[in-house]
Length: 225
Image (cartoon, rainbow, N blue to C red; front, side):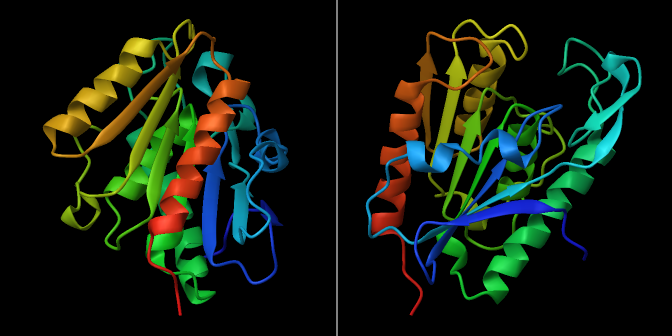
């Protein structure tokens, strides 16, 4: 598989873990790349951050305007009609990055997938249906678009899942974030949910929480030999 173009940053030589971070509609990998120093990770952390660029496609709600998107958005009420074909194709593209990290010697249990908005919907699909145990799932300001079609894999039932959402989000209303959490709990997952007094964005307090979460996971997860 030919990988999507992406930005890579390594916090130290010879990374022992990877975070694959997916942007939202109309953005690209540059949107979240600046967050790495803001996480203020320990000097000893050896993490490879990968920020893929979504392909440019026509987006229906924007009059067919071509822009970076993980899948088409057909209605303003985003959870009514889902471009499942496009979303699944993007999830497979992310699986390609996971496979490459395995080839690079990263233990699957030290691969974390993060996604914002559209990217979060793809992250849900990619992680929960993956056939190898992964390290964690971070879903920001997003929704579980494929809840009814997703083939949940038991191998990731114990995966750490953190869901974060803005209380005043006008793009992906907070109730969709909570709906995703409720569905995951019903499916037997343990989920941590946090909300913030913001709209469809990321705030400093959230970045601090993400940093603590990453450090907690990577300090306890199995390390590759």
